[in-house]
Image 1 (cartoon, rainbow, N blue to C red):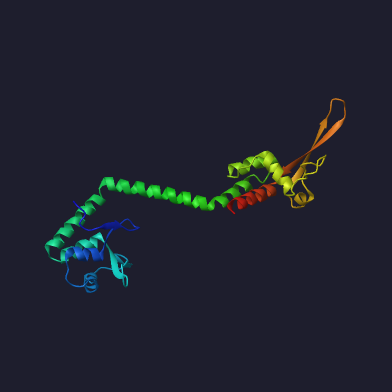
Image 2 (image 1 turned 30 degrees about the vertical axis):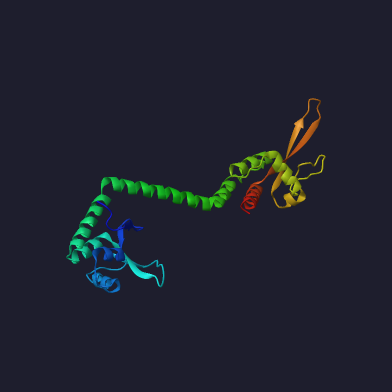
Length: 236
């Protein structure tokens, strides 16, 4: 059956039609502003059977229109007692039959599932900073090497490797740049803020001497701080 009257569906999945388009198809002589209230008086309720809206206008004021559910549209068509009314009613009955067919029910279910997936993706995108923050908190119980922090940043969309991260930490005053025994150890500023700790390791050399090595490790607090800092920089 050809599309006699343009239909759509609302957010609840009901088939709806414009009151003005139905009025025009039925060939009603009474003005729409007078006709529709009379039709609504046949026991139809706004918010249940129809909803009001202002239609777009090419000039002058927007016109009052209504979105009518198909059940109401069928009854209104029947009330006209005209050939056009009978034709419209049969058309709406056909639409309902097609709408409730197994194929259409499955199609709507798939469309709904796709929409749910897209909505979930959108929510995750909005929540990404919080998710990343939570991931950082999960690792906050143990200190990690700078190279491991670089990997964590890269997993979360920050394109930086270990060497570049070391450079950045030195250039921004978090690690000591001066060559010597203190090179790459945390600055006093970093230590005071609890972003780094120094791990000492004692090594017994074959000749009996003892060597102590010092390694900078990023604390849990530091992981949260640096991840958020890089993410804020990326979003800026």
